[in-house]
Amino acid sequence: MNSSAGRITSVEKFGKHSYLTAMEYIPSFAFFANRLFAIGSQLSPEQGSSGIEVLETDTFKLHCFQTLTGIKFVVLADPRQAGIDSLLRKIYEIYSDFALKNPFYSLEMPIRCELFDQNMKLALEVAEKAGTYGPGS
Image 1 (cartoon, rainbow, N blue to C red):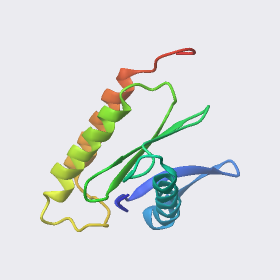
Image 2: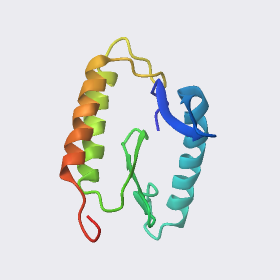
Image 3: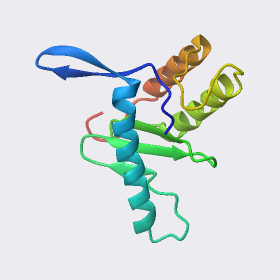
């Protein structure tokens, strides 16, 4: 997990939207996710497992793609959503192209690049068009 992002999410608080900044949201999620993946790799029957790739519940699936350098990309999705593996690989490609190859980008800093934002939006739209499958879709 890279701590790159400006405003990460909005949460509902007492009927009002408030925004968590990257500095408020990412440390908690990164701690949770890193512990979850560490436990998963220790409990895995496979020798040398890198941890959890998919955690499935009735209401969502948590998908993780870990790069060879240890960066984790995490997507929370509807359990019936198709194409998440492709989306994770596309996100990694976009990150590599528009963050890592950017001479002005520093690791662990928010990504402030319009081309990155545009390509992420496009990748998410493509994933959304892939749709869901199975009962209830």
